[in-house]
Length: 99
Image (cartoon, rainbow, N blue to C red):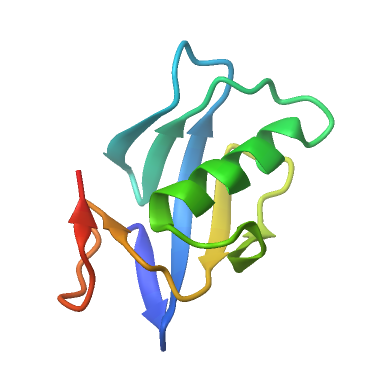
């Protein structure tokens, strides 16, 4: 499973592919959610871009998305504080699920 809940917060394990042709939620990959992003992996730009991408997907302010592990790795762990919507594959009946 690529996510766990801690009260109202979501811990999300991500496998990121940089320099993709488009931004895309690919789906479950091993124990992570694979995400393709167009940003290059230079000087933290991909992490910043991915943080913004996740904030948009979960309908939260940028400061509610925190990289907690994997700053220089393809596998990363993010904390999403109080997500307002969920992506397909993450279960919680209290939220609207987007596809």
